[in-house]
Length: 300
Ligand SMILES: [Zn+2]
Image (cartoon, rainbow, N blue to C red; front, side):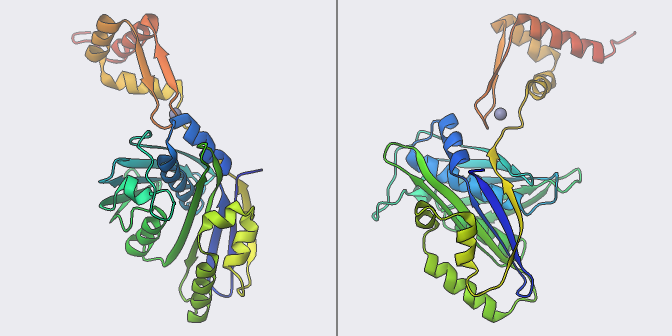
């Protein structure tokens, strides 16, 4: 299990903590989408953040994060579930590499500092829950923490790190999320703040080869806790031919017939994983006849 997440609880102090390594899945996502380094860092942080949020949802439910900014990357869309799978993409994967003065990849420059973060949660009702906040910094981690405080009134600290090597591959990715639940002691919160400051950038901790267990150990230094769960993480798309067929069918008979007459075939790509589904003349004719069979003709 190279990518995994652990969930811990400090019973007495009312604090929950999540920590994860996502290096393999971020590499896979960046390869699939052909992202340039700054886009890789942005996508990697968002995927990792999505998995952290996913780990907080009830079994079987999904969570979606949509970052929209005024930068050249335009947007990042991520969807994760409670089982530890995630998928996602960025608006413009091949943006120019943007670097800050200190040499770090300029994620907020790519996404932009003006815009919105929308969090969607499938809460088992017809209408999914939606929370929208303004982007705080465009650096992803701070924006997610701000969402929790602003939209869910849960004090949270989030750290996300992605290290992209000069050859473009991701050598370290992961992050953490800490939430305090009422009633929480000031002393515990102060200790957490001290620990978080001491750690500095998550990227460095992960590049040093520290495991999620070691990262959480550093964050919870001086605060007793127990590990509740450890689970594997992966990039996995939920698209399949059936779903794409349903999208085509939703276009309606007229549109499909037009497609068939104009092009003789159809190609539909999945934005999340870049899979391409091909429908030849026979497939399209079959879909059209399926629609015609499903809709009773007038007078019949
Ligand atoms: Zn897909």
